[in-house]
Length: 504
Ligand SMILES: *[C@@H]1O[C@H](CO)[C@@H](O)[C@H](O)[C@H]1NC(C)=O
Ligand SMILES: *[C@@H]1O[C@H](CO)[C@@H](O)[C@H](O)[C@H]1NC(C)=O
Ligand SMILES: *[C@@H]1O[C@H](CO)[C@@H](O)[C@H](O)[C@H]1NC(C)=O
Ligand SMILES: *[C@@H]1O[C@H](CO)[C@@H](O)[C@H](O)[C@H]1NC(C)=O
Ligand SMILES: *[C@@H]1O[C@H](CO)[C@@H](O)[C@H](O)[C@H]1NC(C)=O
Ligand SMILES: *[C@@H]1O[C@H](CO)[C@@H](O)[C@H](O)[C@H]1NC(C)=O
Ligand SMILES: *[C@@H]1O[C@H](CO)[C@@H](O)[C@H](O)[C@H]1NC(C)=O
Image (cartoon, rainbow, N blue to C red; front, side, top):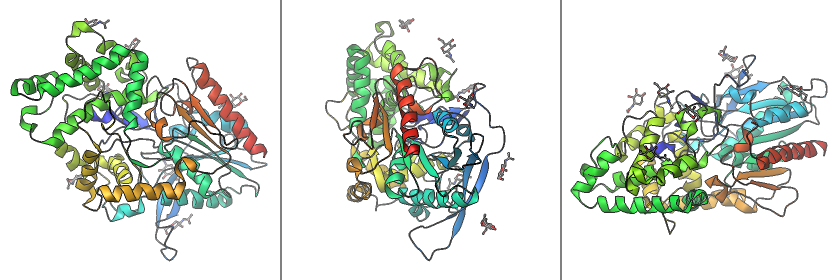
């Protein structure tokens, strides 16, 4: 792991953690990570009752004659619902991880639901958590895992719930989502405006792109904003690794410093292992930057929850640890400890073999396999080392990510396919030219994902809120007194926008 932290990290965080709805932005190939997560914490409100329900969902919305159905999990909470007027419903969109009912009683949207007397729903995304449309995750079956099918799931779900809960013919549905579900929230309003009246789209990438090289640009900027010396120390430390890799003694030093599970000497001719090593090291920084000081309850009180960009930069600036490479190693050791890893597994094949398992029982089915498929088939979003200048080395180029697509899903998923697939996605949804109303795009400046989202706009009907100093999905977590004033203001502004849409 180590790697994991990456994008998703959150997961990593994990075992005890309950990931909230999706949101895991798995880094390509990384089984963990994620995005929005909550953890069972005594401060969280417990679900007063069983909110779980199952919905008979169509397997293929785009083949009219195909009547196959499967059971999709959802949660419903009516504690704030105006039983008399029955005219407001909220929908939390599930994403690239298992859904959890913790969200049904926690998070900023609960306050909005209370204010608007909304009936609250959360629909788990197809192919994640307990929502299994097919008997396994073979490539053949994964053809049903697309954002378009997921959006159509939302549409048929809303339509069915209008009947099932006898909602008013005037009912207004407001959708919520963070990370990939943030994209879905905006796209749901775009594609099904007669069903979704407004959307809060948090930290959602809108541009599909094979080479998301700006991701590490933002991570670098985050370090630089803490301290220029921190940025420089990472750059120098990486250059020292480049040199050490060139001879046997250096390789042995790295094996020991970075607590590698296998000797680096044995992998020196294996470019994939070396790429994986560099990418995992960079991923440590990404994981901290993406979630810096957020209110993820998942990590409160844990060592990982204590690690912020300030912690990282304190290590990188501490000359008594030794040379820059030793400081990188010290940070790496801290991350291993925080994620309970006894050593740093950088072997490419062990990662790929685990993710090839198509069983729902395998750990790859926690989301790593599915999300990687979605990136290979629709979005790209690969966080590469292609941007120059680059402080994390240049050993994990776009080709390395595409190789993972091919190794996992077959030769069809090559570079040409990815270009076609991402272009198609942008054509279907409009990328930054998306034309919507009653949508608010919310991003945090520290979160690398803001680089693929709308952070400013002239469209009065679809405003953007760009929160200086906050990380991924910060506005969705339960408010705390320590929140930055601009984060508190953003939550208030979102509440006012929702109210204004409901008043329309
Ligand atoms: C909650 O209800 C769902 C649907 O009725 C059921 O499948 C599930 O087993 C219940 N969970 C518990 C813990 O009772
Ligand atoms: C869902 O599908 C199952 C199996 O076809 C069927 O038995 C059940 O009645 C359906 N439930 C609803 C609410 O339509
Ligand atoms: C709902 O709002 C009311 C009125 O502001 C407040 O008293 C109550 O504590 C809120 N409930 C929850 C669960 O937040
Ligand atoms: C996290 O930091 C707090 C405050 O500095 C400290 O009391 C606590 O022991 C730390 N927790 C872990 C698990 O390191
Ligand atoms: C710097 O590192 C040394 C050696 O690991 C440690 O004893 C010291 O507490 C660190 N200093 C700071 C300011 O973190
Ligand atoms: C790591 O292991 C310890 C002790 O087994 C456990 O208390 C802790 O929750 C684990 N942390 C993570 C992130 O899994
Ligand atoms: C897939 O994972 C399951 C559950 O861990 C395991 O039982 C099975 O042997 C694995 N299959 C392969 C082909 O590795």
